[in-house]
Length: 527
Image (spheres, rainbow, N blue to C red):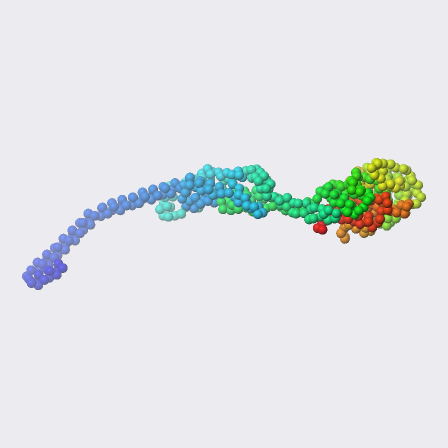
């Protein structure tokens, strides 16, 4: 605009055109000089302002960094709990809160919570915070500040959990509060009255304390996994007591209508428990009633002969034993005693061996052949009882207890070579000889009496015995054997006597039911 006016003025007054140009040039130079001088005056102030602002920002950053420096750096974890940006007090509070949450235990259908303090859980806060502090101040202040200015992240730090747990307190709690309340006891099988069968029992469960301790300790040490599924062990239903078994057997006898004397001897070859009772007409009598031994006496004859034979057993003796045990023939029994014991007093040698083994109620006082002389009249505690008599044969007598103990000795000898035989007749009866004798007994397969009550294929090594007396009737029947079952082996001896005729079919049926009841007791078969 200014130049435009001058131009117009120049056009009107050409003579002053040069003057006007000089004036314009002079004004321009003055303006530039004036501008340079003004700029020179403001630069120091701008610099000062910039320095002030920079210093202020630096102070603000220092203040901000100092506040951050007093807390834990970002990326810091203590016991798997993030504490970056928290003060010492805030971090401690967060740790207590996280590890103070109860642990949830699930046991079967029950849900139970346990407070950490109940298990003696105690955080070592001071140790963990001190370790975190050492990591925090490990980098010098100005180096850390420089990293902060340039937004360089610090190294991630993880302080492991430091805590203690009282295992004793935890175990006590599990036993007294959990196991005692939530375990389910197994229920024993129950006998079905009047039958040889049992109602199947119920399984139970018991807390696995050792496993539970490990699981709960792991949960207490974790800030997130605070749920535990407690493990337990299954408990199989126990067998009924032997007393309940005796009641079952007596009910079987009552249901049969048998009006004579029945004595049962049972020996558990695993637990060494025994059951022995005599029962007649609804009343229980002390065991060890004297019975006619009949052919069951051939078991001690076999043992006495084998004691006096050298190995290997002579073939002639082996053949005679086979006939005596398997076919139950009497002549081979007499022949064995005459040839290998004593030609005249062989039966008394058998009796002496029985007495040496402590069997005071068993004896053989004469040979089997008809008209054989009675070598000695023998009195025993059993045949002198006044409460009950079966009118046993004066030639051979035994009790279920004696015969059961003899079979137990034979079994132990066959299993280990030890037992009563090794103690009473050291070096005279070997383990292999005992195994051979059991093999003879196992070949006695008649399918009646005890064997009739066993499932097909069940192994039994036994010897039966009965005789037709002078009146033409059977009055006593016995069967003595070792029974091998999946759930355990046992010795079983059953003897029956009836003053009137003992009818074979009735007796055989009762033998079988008693045998079945005992087998079921061991193997707990469902009805």
